[in-house]
View 1 (cartoon, protein in one colour):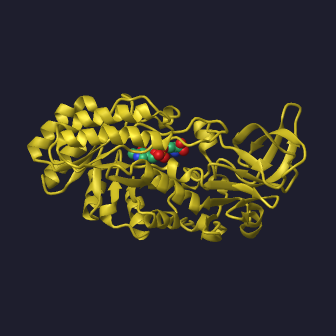
View 2 (cartoon, rainbow, N blue to C red):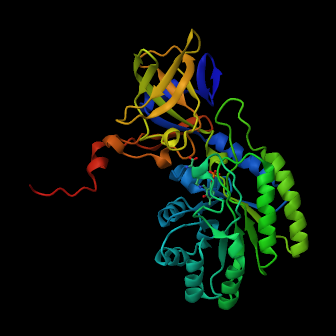
View 3 (cartoon, rainbow, N blue to C red):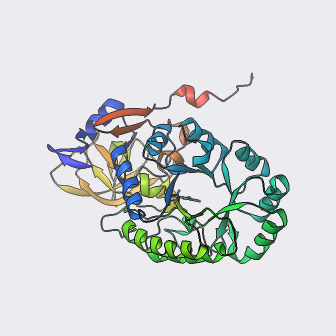
Length: 410
Ligand code: LLP
């Protein structure tokens, strides 16, 4: 978002025009920013054979998936439904990795039948896989590296208490199963967490993955998961992707030499690719002074953007209806019957009823975590690409709310 001709714009399109055309609340994505992020990741790892498996769950609109495909990424999916979405968007089964957790073997079988590689995350399912497929179906194994890293406890998933992955301490057990069933393990995977800013964490993960990989013959790739941190706040430290690329690529090249094979390195970023591209445009319904705080009540809330409530996440907010004039301190709250504070104590240009606020970093885990709580409709999604705007999902209607309800006669 930039200021052009005294208006906040994306690619020369004023955001206020988008709010007028599609109404508020509305999710808005800058497609060219997404393409730039893909390119910078590719550049960072240009010295090795790198594949991007975009974490579908971050933003799973079909047009966004198509954009990723056009940019040359593959995808990581975490449910059969996400696999179906990816197939629908044109990805071939070979471009999809399935990384479930806590699913039954039926779901794993379904993915295999769809021709999708499965990333197995626990020992019982590894044994089921062996019994069912033996050496016939290639697979990936998700290891838990026992590294504590990530933005907060809910999104730090590589530690010893986490439900994700097979503990690295259980590697011997894994190897026994692999031998017993002659499993065709072609990949090993770790995902340490989300919002990781230090290249050293990826290097630590790499060392653990290399150690494990030494025990496996026939590997084709190592998957380092996602987790690159993007800036949410002015002055935030973020992952320096070129630095991570340089350091991890060097370590990876050394390992490939030792392993005697030019392996592929995979990443599954979500936030890095789509977070900063997205804005949630909301309208100020009411400006409510109280003895302690001046609240701005907007036409959205935790039903549309859960992150502030779920993770105490910080999202920047801008009053895009005002470019100048005095600034005041406000707490921006939703219209949901919960204490759904979107942003506390923020300095904004003076807000008046009807002003439009842009909530930043809404691309990742925004719409995809939205709900119908309080029986509110989910907003439309709009994509701006190469200077044009496209409606890529309509606003819900009352029909959507009642569609699957069967009403009993009383
Ligand atoms: N790979 C795996 C196996 C994952 O579990 C995740 C995220 C990713 C990749 C992508 O991580 P990213 O690059 O987006 O950090 N809803 C939370 C984040 C949950 C992430 C879950 N797994 C949030 O809004 O902060």
